[in-house]
Length: 316
Image (cartoon, rainbow, N blue to C red; front, side):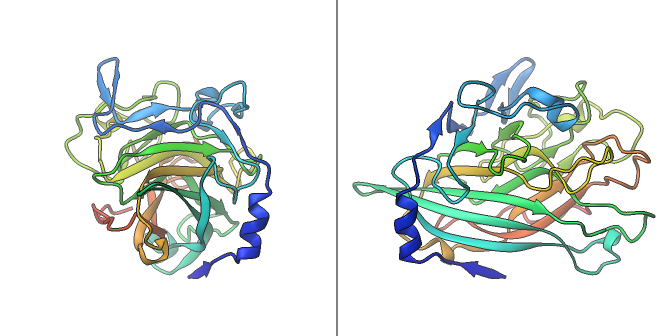
């Protein structure tokens, strides 16, 4: 694991970076969820173009398609005024499961940043992260090359804290975030017939909910996700190489803003704080082997005193 801390000279340079333009900006995720047709959802919609990555998406701009979006000048720049850089880290995404032959395969990298703002005696922190997938063929079972696809990014440690969320499409080649929820479970989205805002009522907290085979359509129960106050889930679409030959190997930055303290975030790291989920979003050629359900745990920053529950228990 590699911890990267920028020097004061770099911080001074950052202060000269032109301030970002704002759109809708950060959105609050209440622990009561959002009222929707049929009940309550843990999720709010962000970018609704492109059918969650199955179609052609339209990236956010300061004037359109910009719910939940912010526009910092670079990934290292704070996404909101008044916040100062305090820490960053680069962490490998290491997969080890039946598909890798129970050996470690590094399929990508997660880069994290933490910014902090003090107002009187109150501290707020923004936890930012992005994922970059690589060309590692993780699947030793199937023929050909299978690349890890990230459809859900979950991060924990926020129980008892207020949570505001946002995303940016830096780098500009990245896909937008389609929805964000105060949830632990990543819900599969294959087509327009799938739930845009999954309802609550599942009664459990699996890492992934959906139909782990193809063809077929997920049942209504397989489209549910309960509110979990300790977790935030971002639904996106990150592929090193998609079945149609296209590549969006890097996510944009995803952000969680909450209260914190003056404690150094480097002391608040957990091996399972970030969970990357492949949820079989794309309708691939053979369907069964290209995109099985997979969760990969990654070390990450959490607010001071935060804990990571539930532990990873799913057989993905």
